[in-house]
Length: 134
Image (cartoon, rainbow, N blue to C red):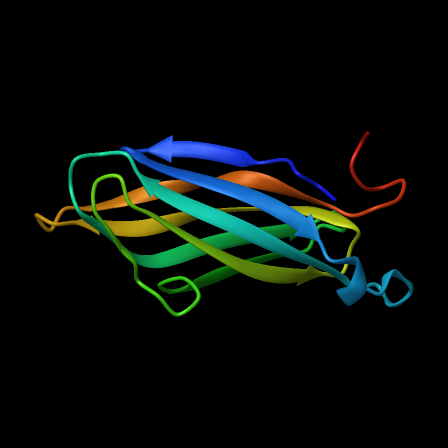
């Protein structure tokens, strides 16, 4: 199991992502590979912020790319006070044994200032010779 954690901090908001290959939901013989990704968003600043929307970019090792834009995350638009955090798990399928994701969370602070928080690019490496290097 991949325990690599990818991390980035923007405007006092830290985003940590831990991807996980889902062997039981993948079927490599059919070209179907599934991943979960576990995300933790931490407010290390001194202002209240709310996550409004997300913009993901997903690419696989075959060169296929897609973008996902939408309100909130997993049905929530969490508000984080100073020191608060929010965690969630989501997933994505790919038609290739590896790829990567990156993104942006669109946020607003309590004074109405809008800003973007970068989600670090993270690897989606399946098992086998095209997967992670050990």
